[in-house]
Length: 380
Image (cartoon, rainbow, N blue to C red; front, top):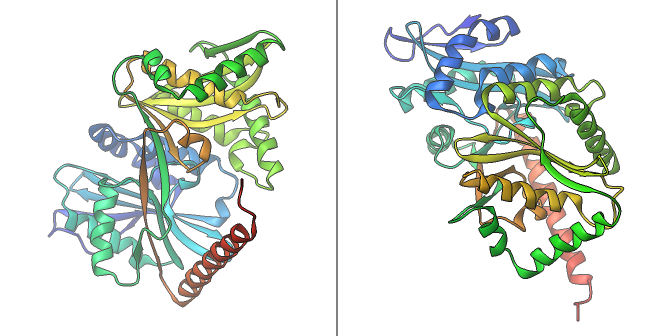
């Protein structure tokens, strides 16, 4: 356990920086209490961060940098960060952010912004990283307010350098049928046509996995489909490895603290599409969705999305959140979007050179794309 030498508010508060697995487990109860009081997302729970740290396969390239702020024996703030080594650089970022769609901090109601800033300063002062990369921050969240404060006083950091978008579907008025009827005529036709095509191949069924059904076979199918999809694009993820250790650990956390909803589209008993979702504060959070790419007659993933959106609104939920990622298929249903915020900046000369190269590369890619688009003949 590492305790900062100077308190943040007279003698009544102190900063602690967690760097070890052992200390992470010791503070579980205090962290959970604060998390429950704030009704925060599962992504900020102690269980989620611990599931990531204990089960992913690349700990030697990561270091915990979780900041805690104590007032006596009471935990009043958690800033869950980690240092990740990749592409020759060390990044200070949210812990578990690769698998967490929103990053945020936890704070008690009486924890001031100045106290949070002292906690931030202590983490940064410890060093050990080249580039600050805080991403996927929801506007007006606790983290957004802290980062605004940091950006105002630190000239070397930049707000919004790496924005991402989150698409959401609002219910408006009515149930799932009312929402479906508000879709465009073309979309409703596509949906009906997709069902007709697949039903000619066999028995097609949409359903929510029952709470008492075995989950492991479903996760195995999910991991297999996702792995094939990623390999086809030259990508990989430690979430979908053969042992499914990390995937299973995350799903177990969701089952304990949120309402887990696994939606299936089955063709003759075989899974054509899967979506692992969970319910938080009246919103359906769509965490992982995939489909069988061998089905080429239509898109089973599209059919499943429409079905689980209808189901969600029939249950009285007010929003379906596709979480981070601006994929075009999400925008087909979105009623609104939220631009997620970020804070980036160099810690040292190496980090500055790395960010400069990243910026130049982005400009080069944009320029090349513009030239290619200009060279294409206009469509009739």
